[in-house]
Image (tube, rainbow, N blue to C red; front, side, top):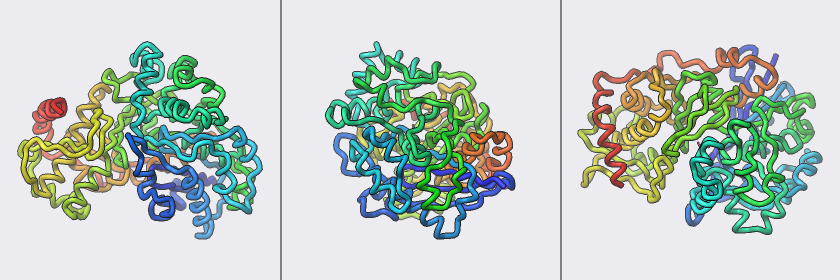
Length: 515
Ligand code: XUL
């Protein structure tokens, strides 16, 4: 019997799944929603919504409380953690946690009769964590690029131009805004390595998947790049955990989890990765050939890459593939929040997206287009929020549903051509992937069949699979068990649809460029 635990600390929730890797079944899954389960933090979507000038931060104490709440709830619900042989996890990418040098010692002596929040709160040198939605660091990005001799250099070294949400510019801003607190910071973790360290009872490494989302790692050398690190802030190299391959074991689980939740003292920990790299594994896309679209708070499009290839326009990224090699990623900030905005505006149920609204409108919306950026966007860079229609006037619910979906996926198609791969199928994951209406628009815009997987939560499943992989299990076997498309759920493109969108994409790009 081999049970592994996968965890996923995402923007809005912390989720867990236990996989039986012999029988190939999901034994149990559970989730804590930050907004609903921990309303006292006043962060209903998992972050502080009052941030000024593009700042989006979350409370790391909320994450700690969620961790105890989730494991406690699972234990009370009858989960026997003593059967778990290995654990790993997935974290929202780019977010960072700032801690004093005492963090490592504190982790080694956590008392199971107390909780994580009260024992670790004193180690924080910054009481909030900037997350991936933060866009407040344009000045710092420009400074980093200038120091390096231009964004071409930053991109050639790190796989991405200097990006606002990436951790390097965030660290630079912190070091400028609060030099004293920066000086007191002994170690800077990503969300992924923060949780991984807590589980291992010591500071552990950042993996190549998530590390590449910092603008600090040299992609070719797979290590921190001295020039990039020096361009960010003085003394930063000493504050970074090491970089390591994603399958690295980090020792047995901390006594805290043995004493408090009944884990076996021999349970191994494997370092965590970012949510998109974990999703790549969960979707069975570790080898090149599959293109994944993940529909979550952000929408992302990603694929394994044989060779690192960077986006000439600077919107796409190259990360380490947890299975070795590289992956590409393009992130669109206006994901589920934009779809929800249309749903709320017209008081619709998701079923209206499922078919009704789409059946009532024509493919191509009679030429009506929407730039679906309810919030400022990152791909492409749009500073002001609010949808823009190509034609003035009132638009019906049906037209608006189609317009938001066509706008999102035309934008995705236009910004993924640099990958140079014409997908033969698209694999869909994330909350909205179950919606047939959404899946149909994707199939139509890209002109290929869309598959969904049998198991929910590809990042969480991928984290569990990575735990097993780190213990030596074959990834191909794990994919065979957990990453299979759901039978009878393939959505085929509708006849003639691709031609409509082939004709429309140029107009959409022109419309976008006029803004
Ligand atoms: C990827 C990105 C988002 C977060 C969401 O670059 O910023 O997809 O990983 O958790």
